[in-house]
Length: 534
Image 1 (cartoon, helix red, strand yellow):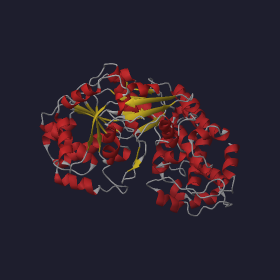
Image 2: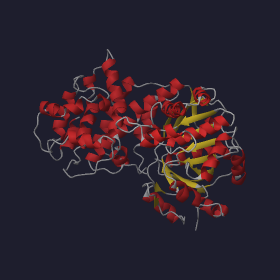
Image 3: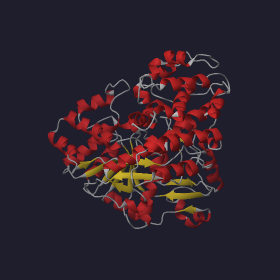
Image 4: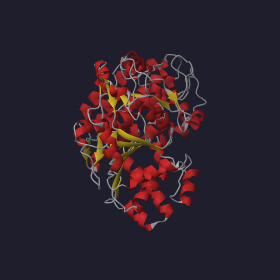
């Protein structure tokens, strides 16, 4: 029997016999070093962090390039630390699922300690302030999702916890970013040592989002010195980054494989906040992390672990390449049509000739002519890897239903930017965008909540879902409405530039979208027929 803990890993030979790669560094020494002089803290103790940043730190530790680990900080769901991290002595398992069928099982031990960002827990919060007061701390990274940086609700109103923190000051904040700002305030009071606050969340201009959120607290607290500290890039920097690695929810098939190895303690835990915790992460092999090289207190040489450090403009170009052309539009296309056609795995969709033709046209034919070339990554080679290796990987248990989450927030970037580029080009015709406009029509068809056989399915969560369902409430499968009738019925949606990136009616593209939609709602099987017609 194998148990993921300090004691359970004493029998290294048994773990290695079962094919596990174990840490090669002195973990006890690493923990002592980190406690004495922390270098790297991370907010957001989820799967992407464990599969990417923690694995990179382990490479550095194994190679002798670092002698301190990561301080993992969870600020949304404390049970992740209490029920996930600490019972395993902060170890985790990374299961890399390669496209050629190989499985690499790695025990990750680069987390030195796990902390809860809980201002009501005196001991936890005191330890965090101690870490942030330390002059040795060079960087704090983040994977808290794009929503984590927002200080307002969907109506633009300041969140109650944020408003209360603005008023009460930095001593005992309750909001997530308020607590982060209060730790920076403690650092400022302890000598204003420099630090890099590095968002590695999968959103455009992520560093700017973090800077704006923390600056709002500094302004509200009205301490001129702290405002100057946050506003001085030589003291506090907010580098931009682009991250790309698929880490789906821990899958039952991977869990069973680990059980066959004799691994104990695999029973998943669902927290009171509905977070799914497992001691392992399953992830793809491909990974990219491009970071603006702006670290006023220095940084570990993480380029030796595969990170790419560059300037802000290049980071922005890499982000646009991925999000607007080479990956995210393909993912959303598969999400929408995968749900409509009853698929539950992305790799299964990549065996569907019609869907492969759709995404190849979205990416190669319609996207590449306006792609942003960042220089550090070749766009065509990137999309080749996406189409030929990453998406077809039969061992990656990623689901179209997961990717379909928050689609209304994704469309303006994933498709709207390409449409804008075509509209602005003297050499390109936006009406030639057959596949992209078919995806937009497919998303409206998706909002009906009926698959291609006419059977209901559960729509993925979306902050605009109630309003969206209201707008499409008049659609019926089997309707013989003309494109003009659909255009009139859906005018409030089609003219919403915040969803599509452009006003589809004003640009003249609504006609093609509605022509596609009229075909898609013609009856059972119409989705498949429409895809084949493309």
